[in-house]
Length: 168
Image (cartoon, rainbow, N blue to C red; front, side):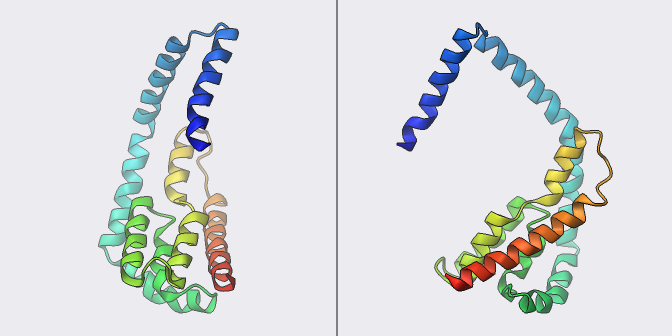
């Protein structure tokens, strides 16, 4: 049934556009023009966050934080083996997916640790990337409340994910 959803959606949108007398092609071209402008506007912000993430990992600060926070994460129910993922996930999606792949390779995909890692990936967000993209196009520039709350939400979701994996 899922293979029919996308074609059905396209047909529905074309019929709806025809009824509303909307020029679909021109609307599509206008949308693409807007997307190019958006990419140009947010590019410096994305480059800045990517450089910060690379420096965070290359400098060894990520490993230092993992070593410091692993006992705290263990106390909270987060396995030590996935503490790096909990720390890295808010900063980078591709880096956290690489770490998830390493966890799968090391522990297998059906283990408690891999299940925790999978649930952490699904229940958390690349917080700094999202904040960078959204604030680049809005008038909101002060993130003094949003970032700490987002970090706490990521930590609580990681704790809940590991607790649920332990129960299941």
